[in-house]
Amino acid sequence: MSSPNFDQYDEEVARGMARVHGEATGLPGYLDIAVTDYGPGMLVAKVPVRTELLNPFGTLHGGVLAAFVDHMLGTVCYPVMRRGQWAATAEFKINYLAPVDRGDLVATSTIISLTKRTAVVRIDITNGSRLVCAAQGTVLIVDPKPKS
Image (cartoon, one colour):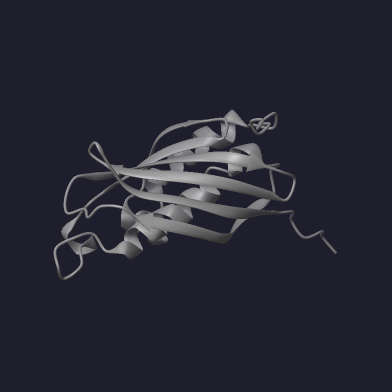
């Protein structure tokens, strides 16, 4: 199996994404997602586990992991897409592997297949040295609508 081609990788876009995550609003801002590393077809980010993200049983709500996965699916694609295109999650499958109640979540997102219209992305989320979540999804790469 050959590796995806990242000839269109745009370092400026990757740097900008890493910088603006610190100023994010909406769900990425609420989760406090911070990009910690990036490169062609890969992105690493972290989320601190806070009390308000825990369920009534004292462990991280699965929806937090799902939201983190969904965010990482599209975000990893922007530096390898043409400017003006946007990424839309088509589907993903998630495996919850271990409970989390403290520390940081660290997600490593890797594009494993890339075409003109889709990307398949693998995401592993760790908490300390434990793999707590494994996911894979498909992202649609959408061209901007032509101006009328």
